[in-house]
Length: 267
Image 1 (cartoon, one colour):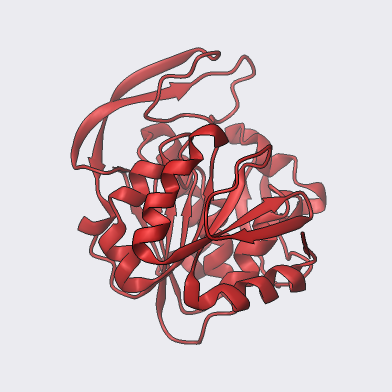
Image 2 (cartoon, one colour):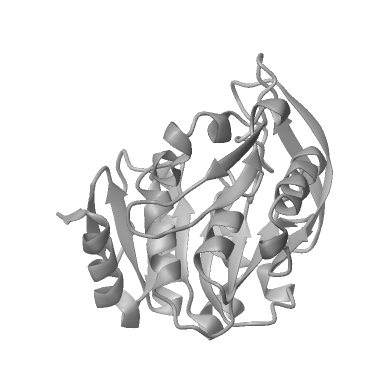
């Protein structure tokens, strides 16, 4: 069954993805096919950010794209967005390509890269997690999981700084199950030059302070997303939250306005 995924509350989008037949749990469990029920409030924040960019060609780098829900939603949201989906797991990348093929009107603006991004180029072991119901893995990474069964195989690594992205990178999403710092380390030149807004996840916030070195060197600040609230800080704020925004210092007031418009309250 093909699922039609529609608008968030703030941005009109529509695209299609596979669900039950490929065991994509998140797609098939979206409430009424509405995108805002996927990883709230991050899905709305990403599209609200994307829709705020000017009508000139720009790039979205989706690192850890999985089956493509953010790649497709950003492409559907902004007619000038060129989306680069990075997904090293072969079986998941194949599903990503199938989902893209369901949306021929978006396909020309989406590029798939079957590599993992890191702080270095080369090859490394990739750990694809398994679950007892056969759902598409959402927790595979370059780090061996402690509590889940997995298969392992080699994947190619590249740096974000080595990518030939044809347009200015305005938005960067990094969800790589614990390897986020390495992705940013390998993309510091790109980040410094393009000044994208960065959405990233930190599974273990106790190690989050190391992001301070990147933020300080690049003149970025942090927005911590805590439920339906947010706080802004010049340094990493650890806690129970997982989702953060790294924002160029010169865009702080704009990002704060967007978060408030999305329905979040400042702490």
